[in-house]
Length: 177
Length: 368
Image (tube, rainbow over all chains, first blue to last red; front, side):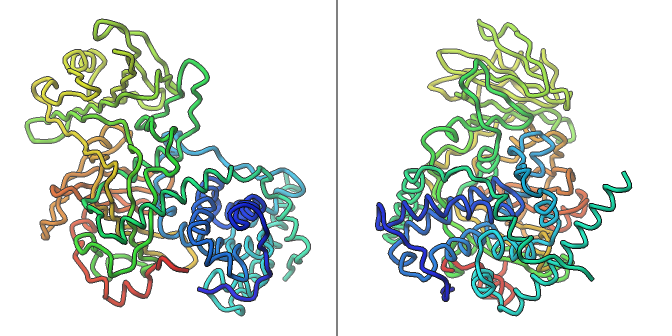
């Protein structure tokens, strides 16, 4: 998939700009993936794997309009191909208390919103994370997810309504406590 | 119906962890390994014997961090973490690459018959992993069967290990053993699991057992011989059959993986077939509390083998088994699938061509 139409995010630095770009982009990629796949540890590993592959193919990736978009697509594919299996296995591990450290979203400004997004279906969560945490346009999200821009727009529209409902329910629960 | 706006959702950006990226050197090290693997594949010297044990790798990969600053290392229930996983390994096990359908080993490509799973194929992929780090410190597994052939006791011996373990949510008790002293470990959550941890000749060793009491475990451990950091299989007491895992370091493991599920949901079923394993099913009998030994006996003999069923916990169960030729099959279920249903699916698996349209439509290709 060629990720067209994204802004130039390249920078100068060691290894033809890879190191600078990586150091700057990694935290946001990791954060968006954590929200998208609902697991901070898998997100860390998927992000590292995707940046590794970006470095191996740096000449090609560096020439793309959006190296970061390529990283998101690669990381999410990696999650689908291998890390999903690890997630299932780790459910077993949880009974053994051998699971990873649990991810605690930062308390400010509104952890309820983060938790609400976590309740969305996986592909919807992915679209929200790419749009609002990775800060990609709807067209860019569509390119990363391999769907049409219309599908992304519809998915995000449904997500916003569903999130409003979840957050309203939370408020109601709080009031009745 | 109400909705929330873009501004509100943009607040998510400020909730992201601000921890810096891992040092670029780590990414460069991983990349160097990945390039090496790809070069090997291009020049065709890969010795594909497949392996196994990627499950062990994943467990080690996501185990709690090991604090070696103190005198002891926390050990949760399950296999102890591989000592190599914490040193000099840029990958958990080794780098892995997605393969094209034409590069997949035909003896790994299986599917259940149409209609077996109440969901469509979600993703299909195949990977090749070059194992660069030991995935486990497992040395040998001893099994004792009853008159009907059922496993009644099992012991896994690991070593050299990271050091002295202290059970998380459990107790350790000093015991006399092997002309010195060791520690008997028990966990509050599982009375059926025992472990020993001891030091000899400058290295730490561990043994884990089910189906034995502490005295029986000490008797077996007293008898074993360790030679050049390897347990001598013939030194297990009479009555135990011994399985010695193969080392996968330097070898290539191919893995076939399919997921069934609805497009926007977690997969209902994963099937993974690996070309080899360093984590034999016999070891999982010991390391997984509640695991049930199971025999897969299929019409297609290439699918049959000894395995382990892990009953549903937290909404997931699995059946994994090893074939005599060294391949490993695993079915992972979401939901409360029981052993009977798992065996039915396992025994129904059949070979399929990678050019089948079912597969090509759902394939995850290496280039994005």
